[in-house]
Length: 331
Ligand SMILES: [Zn+2]
Image (cartoon, rainbow, N blue to C red; front, side, top):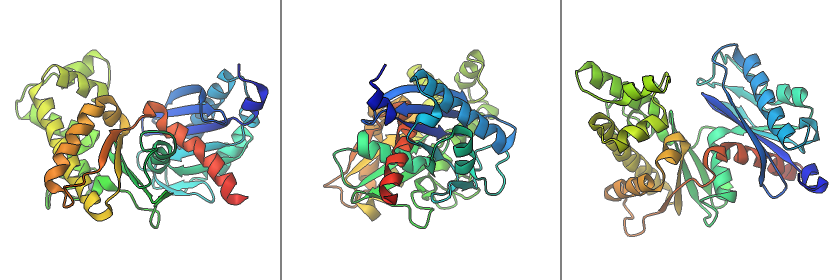
């Protein structure tokens, strides 16, 4: 049990993903006191999602010996378009029945009895790596979150860059004109080659064409409904040809897309996170760095490419930083 003073300064963090919710409670020094994980409800809309977020946070708080209302505040990293002043979230197409604008922050604040601050999930995860993780030594950083989709976050000269609200969408940088169809509906985006969802669709098409792969056998054995990061990792370990080809293609696309962003921004460091990024680890971050080289204009000074160091809880820890930052900005 932590001393009372430490616990009084504790903050909550929630990472709302398309498949899972991670909750953490951290102390004033950002040490994780407790965490909890729940599945994102597949139905029931925002009401069900908000109940699950509150449940996960309450579980984490109680494991740390606290009630949610005793926390200094709670930060939430959410997909979609986030209004950081009101805590409203819209266009979260990865979330079930999330139609129009949902007052996520105010609803959670009422449920949990403390201040709630909402930010974009990828931006808060980048911020977490910048302040506490792999990007700590650098002033300008590109975060690339390689998971179901490919998200990006930017820190330029020490400050988050969100543009007009839509910056950092590195997954939709075009790596091939008239190329593969992206889950966003456009063509040739990096995510159409590197996103886990697009990779799975690609694997299914190869199976339909008669190719053999253990990917879907592993999926059935593990009673999963999708090809998770660990299934991809296992198939690679077993030198499955289809998996290897698709991951090689993903790494080439990431190399081209990230190098394109580098040619524009010339940041010092790239942090690779997300489900696939964290699972595959530094050897794959190194492969991405190698694939970037032929596309880098400033190829004598390639950026540092590191795998995210806060791991699976990085999004929730990054979200908890919103509490400190928001209070600071408001004071
Ligand atoms: Zn796209």
